[in-house]
Amino acid sequence: MSEITLLDGGMGQELVHRAGDRPTPLWSTQVMIEHPGLVARIHRDFTAAGATVATANTYAIHHDRLAGTPVEGRFADLHAMALAEARESGAKRIAGAIGPLIASYRPDLHPAAEVAVPLYEEVARKLASQCDLILCETVASVLHARSVVQGAKAAGLPIWLALTVDDRDGSKLRSGEPVADALGLDGVSAVLANCSAPEAIPAALAVFAAGNVPFGGYANGFTHISDGFLEDKPTVDALTRRHDFTPELYADQVMGWVDAGATIVGGCCEVGPLHIAEIAARLKAAGHQIV
Figure 1 (cartoon, rainbow, N blue to C red):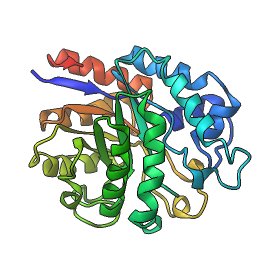
Figure 2 (cartoon, rainbow, N blue to C red):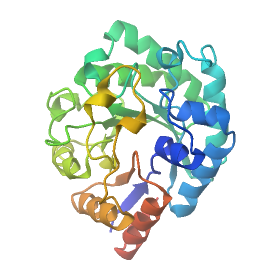
Figure 3 (cartoon, rainbow, N blue to C red):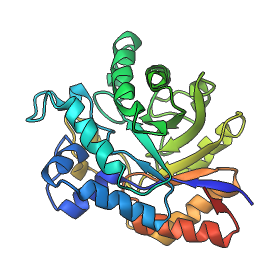
Figure 4 (cartoon, helix red, strand yellow):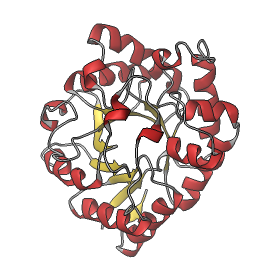
């Protein structure tokens, strides 16, 4: 059977659920500041559930997201905090997460390459010494893919490119462009579909399978990306969790991806330690080795 890398789940949503605070546009960054140590506990819970990669809580730490908030100017400090908590995970590897500039799911807002690449490079250099790989997450367009991959090279680490795809047609990016147009970038050592409906992942995997790098997916548990979430300064309470997103049902989806050739799986928003534990149990029962 296959060797499978098991990623962790959705840190931001898990933080919000456990902290009990009303979400803010700063997402998991705000929770990390107000509840020190909670990130590390969640990392450890995901590792105990079977995850072999801890994704550092650095997704939303960009200058543009911090601008106009009480933590503006704490860019370096926040990265250091997130990486220190990730080191307590006990996971085999740490992935430095680089989320989108400005906003998630908004390819229309992504800046031109000459603006974006230096900003992604700055983040990559902050992550380089503390991580084993760079995970470029929720990449919604071809421009976004090219810019973030180019910037991530500054870390000198393996780059995993995670594309967010259309919830109704996983062969397309959120921008409407074909997934295939974002593939084959120099320096990318794995490609994934992330933060999309589980039902959209198989179509993306079929496109990935034509390439020559390992591939996989990690879905979210939202009903859909609502119009309210696509406004300026959105908060996650504009999104609704699916009622059918149990660990068992999500694991059913993930095992289908593994059957289709995926060797990197896990979860995004609304995927908790119980989901990861169920996936780990299924993988082992099917004879796969989690690496």
